[in-house]
Amino acid sequence: MGYFWSHYSKEAHLGLAQMYVNDSRFKEYYDKLGVGCADFLRDALAVFCQ
Image (cartoon, rainbow, N blue to C red; front, side, top):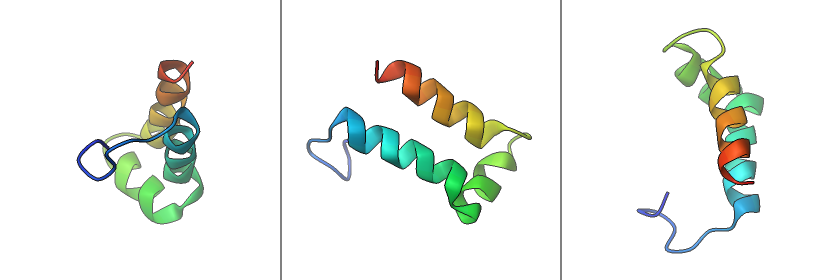
């Protein structure tokens, strides 16, 4: 993310992670790696941002 955003908040990071699940295009992309990957990524980022 630092490549595109020089500074970002935890809230922005979490919003992006939620988009990976809510937006079917992102969910499809990540879930090609394995069923549930988009959800796992969102949940992992939620823990990381605590």
